[in-house]
Amino acid sequence: MSIFDEILKWSPIIQGALGSALFALILWALKILFSFLHKKTTSFNQKTQLNKLQSDLIRYTALESGNLNSNTLALVGLLYFAFSYFIKAIICLCVGVLLSTFFPMFKEISFLFALYFLYLALDSVKTGKSEKNYSETITELTLKIDKIKQKQLST
Image (tube, rainbow, N blue to C red):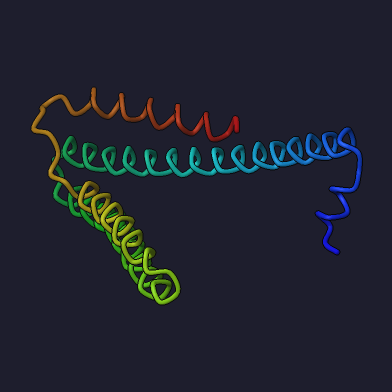
């Protein structure tokens, strides 16, 4: 006999209570799962936004200085940001190809993630706006970075 046959022998009141308890347990588990996923995706979004703002800050600081050494150092830093995103794209492609032997859908998903990381790599080495008021832009970027860091510390 299966467990379901045993439960069907019980009175309807006990079956209802058991069903309600099971439903409450499932809702509680889903609440914890979604809370965890929300925290992780928010953290990922904040880290990505912080990296973008830091690369913009490096770019505008170098443009404001006008110094060749500073511009070269900024270019190396921006290439470092871009290369880290490029490596993440390669890793996504490799994992997707490996997992596509088990689930073919993973290949397409990994391609989308790789495109996302390649877009972030391209965005980190963009040329920038041709505005002349770099100090105001640097101040705005610094305030945004501080705001995101305060959010990260509070969570």
